[in-house]
Image 1 (cartoon, rainbow, N blue to C red):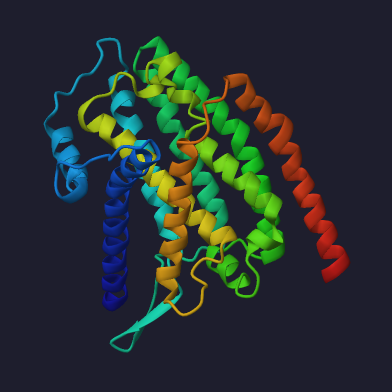
Image 2: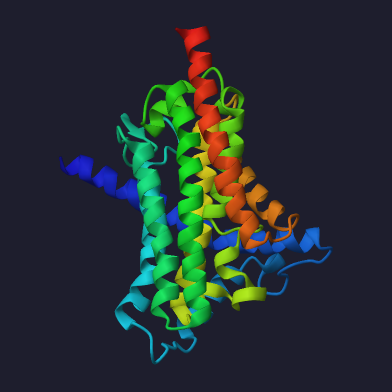
Length: 328
């Protein structure tokens, strides 16, 4: 029992330590990629090619003055960014980074937990993360913040539904709700081939859930002056910032798990393939930000309700038909 707890504790520290390092340097990576897309260098001054910039930003966040609006609901104002980052980190529990490795005669799985309802856990916890944006905007007592929070809640509802429908198609062909089981089911054929429509729906809905351009309605600077987090400063703002990149890392890992075969790949170790695919998805999230303009709010809502939701139901119907004809 003590050995099991020790292994679990070490795995937890490794997973969260590596994940937070990735989150910190995702900010550097995004600034460098956007810089090169826009024909500039990006961070160059703090360390070699700005590699120490995330550390400098973290130190700056700790020492900046912390301001709380006079008319804010202080307990909720403080709790909102904690909810956002806690929800993102909680999702790391069920992500399978690899199959298993043998260390000193002990077989160690490269994931913290293999829940039988792992995909439901992910959908549920990711929804809770959106409450951080909503509560942060509402509790600030700022009209721009309230509008940003309302937009975040409306966008969450609009895109959670088609995302769940896309996942249903994956569950149907995999025959399990376990993320490890879904990866194992892709040993022969990745779900991006078996479920191309679900893949497209999941990508679009994921970008909307992340508030990434062109779906950054809750924090549209031109309209809401930064939106739901307009009144936040110091480490509270940094927590919202970290939560955004943590969710992006989790989203990329989920795309890898559900559609890109997880750790499956030739020649290289499984965990290496997992991170190659995940970083490719993070690059995609950054690339599309530099490519697409922000949509109007009515266009975002129409896309969710009039296009993606019917497409999700269509994918379930086609998947069921395909299974009936070819597998039944």
